[in-house]
Image (cartoon, rainbow, N blue to C red; front, side, top):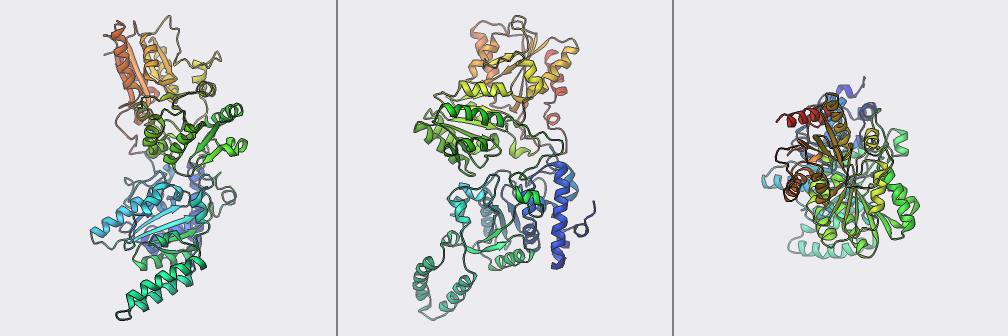
Length: 628
């Protein structure tokens, strides 16, 4: 595909030399490139279309990688990647081992700090700026953060520690639309914060003049500042950033190349910590994305299937709420992603979107539960990690009946390491009073939600970002019975096969494929599907009872091995068998799981092949176990 102006930019030097009159045409080319690419690969579209001019301006004014440019979340960094020498890698965008959909230190020297989760940029940028100050470097650190990420608590902790004399520039990009529409006091504040340029210039020139008066200058300046602040609060709206001692520039039209470049030049000339407040149109230049930025926040590749289990979760929760007025739903800015927008339509007063603040969402849910409500807090597995202390200290320690609906459980095939849901079973499994379930079909998800609706302790229900998988449903639920039994088998327990797989979640599909291949070779193999992972002893006792005569037991887990379900259950099974005088001394136990890895291939490849979790790899693993 030819792009007349973009094709002339092969380096940041080319971009800096480009005449200003050509910049609008360059931005048009970049948008066409994004549309042509993301339509094929899938990815974050609207957010990147919105920051084209802003990113071009950053790279014309600052000198990456000497100056550090940090993007919050990193999902809006496609333009940054394009301009920093990664154009030829976009065909592998969001493929395991390909170009990351977020910033990644391993990928380029122009990505000084990796991301994928929200609200981390100012803390990281502050670290870079303080390090530069210690090193006596005159480099700048620039972080770009959206108004959605601004609702995260870490942002305000970091702002509280910013020193005015640091060469740190915070670009606060406001588009009034994050993944789900921003809510809360801080989001409302952003829509109102405005400071007169005329007032700012008057303040600077007057202060400088007064300071030069011998003896009286500085005391007079302090007195006038006191009086001025009182007057300012009457005439001008309060500015949170200036109250923190940070210089403020804005608001600036972030889709105007001239205005953006001028603002960044002014910020650079200051040589001190400041906030550049921009506003952009999410989805800019593409009418469908402009009119529906949430719908085009993340688009699927042409071959993708949009069906997911979270729709069934939302439907069932609505049914449960119909019969229990104490049921409430909580999300951390993921109302669309978790399916809870459907609940909001039915019960708006019982729906709470707390913004990008998972820790708060969990402790807020604990407070609701302690006050007699039945909270269901829906959070992606990868984001649940951020609230571990809240789960332990505020929910579990007080034995509160909070339902944690863990979406996106398992490997994130497109978003990669930052979004893999592979740690939740391990870190929740250590919490004493936690119940953990892993439904894999619509029917089993509904049934588990029903049986736990009146639970008196914390409950975690994890499920993948997918539709139910036909071969799993047909293999284990062909009779239409979705009763939660702890475990299910694809064999008659009166005739247990000699070789068994033990698994849970969507990886069961690959286990079925491996088992079928082994059966075709005449190997007597069966599958145990675990529905209730914790308490661990429930499934361990059921499995131990099937083991007399079994020669091989292979645990398969789409999660981390250390501390995961497999290792804990294997240890328990050995202990239970010994106490029950079940002889398993000749039985071989082995594991296929994610072993001490963040699951990051170095080249584009199938993630299951990389982790030795493909059906063929599982087949070979079982054969090795059998032949020991």
